[in-house]
Image (tube, rainbow, N blue to C red; front, side):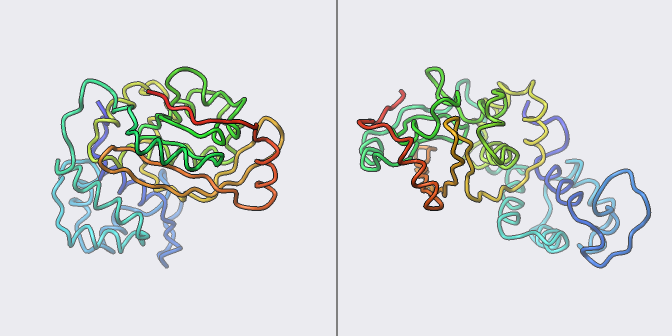
Length: 279
């Protein structure tokens, strides 16, 4: 079962309410409180709804708020555009508009030949084909270079999400591990269905940090990716993503964010690398 506490929409509203400091909205402090952030009555007043109705939304007992209520809550919480988009998406999930029944197996792992040919054109750059659950389906020699010695590509079916939450080396490799962890769990919500989320959350259900982050719905910043390569240099990489919506996959290209990183990647690169696809 994906979530035993309310609904994704309710979880997101609670998370956003807890993240807002009353003083940032010009509201008075009310002394010590057991929970952080904005009080329900303050948010309800700002959104023009009753406290009882807001409570029902947060607890998942009401799954059909109007568009006007969603807009009012977004305004009251001062959500940015990305957070508002996620609020609307979770509204559809809560109503059942975006969800199909989970399949018995994981998402597809095959990569179409034209996509593989495109990836070859990116050699010897740093690029990878992945899906929403973090399966690494194909990669360039450059990707192998910057991840060598980290354990990410160990095994026949490497998976970034599994690696982030179960391999202790991930905390050393990703300089901003918290941000990467938020990105991985957030992407589980972005597929056309929740099949992949059911599959992977079932596999990682016993990992408390994964489950906690899955229900927080933190919209990630997706800034430069900072990697601590075992060979010594810190790498700062920008990411450009090409969505393959019909496949449920993405091509992610990593570009050096500065000259120091470009030189470090060049020093790490092995000659004669070639694309390796995993089927």
